[in-house]
Length: 179
Image (cartoon, rainbow, N blue to C red; front, side, top):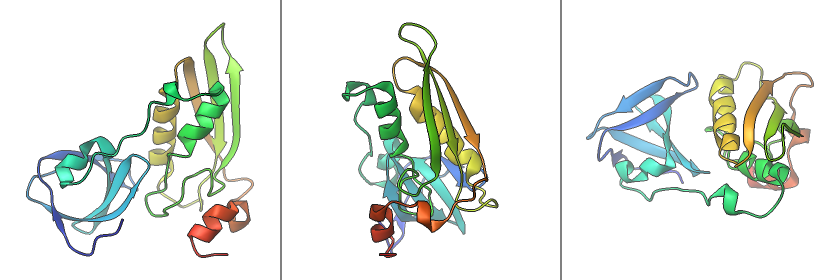
């Protein structure tokens, strides 16, 4: 959802500066350009910087509130739900989720007790120098923790094996015009 015309921020809103992950406050009356609206967040270009706004704050942009269905109402195992959540995580510069990009190498769910689980995810980035690592790791942890029964989440960022386009799903390649 790229907008060529600026929108006005309607109210003060918290944003995450890309790629540092630092929290900033956008002031009401500021101008911004929407570059992406995926998962449950907006990516904006503001004063020469990219920032990410939570979808729940869409009204601050004069746009719809982006919200995802409650993962705990979805059918499936804990692992199924983890994969669903991972598909809602997007690199703010690439309009494809991290699963279809091939960034997630391993997802393991281990029981901790009768109804408690630990989740370990091994993932990479499109390039070792990509500054989005902390932001994506934090988003993955936050979304997986929303699943009832998940007590622990560990996300390990690795660069071996290195990511390449061959790890992308056909759907992602098609979406990016690579097929």
